[in-house]
Length: 324
Image 1 (cartoon, one colour):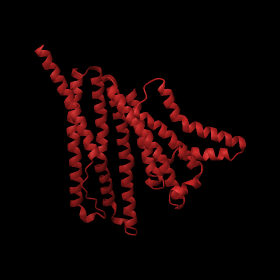
Image 2 (cartoon, one colour):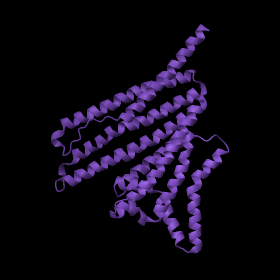
Image 3 (cartoon, rainbow, N blue to C red):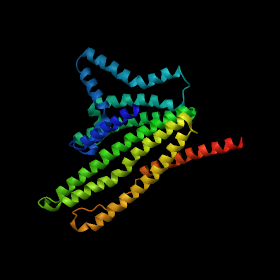
């Protein structure tokens, strides 16, 4: 059931990414809006509340202080339950950054003192930079905390962390396919139309190759989604019994899949470039590049190594049992 729900989540993410590709505005504009959320909205709300009167101003100040002190308050609560670690200092930094971020978003005029006054785009960029700084501290704390928990956890809990990481990677891979690669294809379509205004009659093959380019670029990430699912199945088998026959079968399946996935990525890239060379005379736009998706390749190689280690682990266990 959990897998079905997660697949539904990935499908919804894919649909949302495709929809975003058709939204007017550049990716930079959407990224700025995402980084500024929800700080820009909270700041505007605090400003409106503050200007509503004396009581509203007092309520805005109270809410402002409460929101900003929330991360530090979480640290005080954690202090009574566990030992404070070095990474917990980032929670204090987050509180300080929230004071700064919400003050600036509640007083947009102050942003001009920190960033070049270039109109609305400068204001949006300033809010995005402020929000991005807060998010960087939060992500840094989460990463360091997860690293400490994983290093101090037992094997069973470590498998749980690995499953969560694979799920997160799946979300990233779906975003890469349906937002980055699909958006690049739409951008290629737009460039073709703009560069061939008045002579659109022969653009059909160029559109086809732009779509093929999308498939070649997206294939590594699409295969990574399947790799993550197969790797998660192996992790579940190892969590149940790392020496079982089911674990060995899952490891062998992952090994075969990873080898095939790497071959498919190479063949797709070479095949696309060769096809462009063959049909170069009828194409209005050529995109012959050496695509090397290092992140995708490293992920598949890591999964392959993990599968080999799992299979070797079972083999060593059998040898040990024979000796005993």
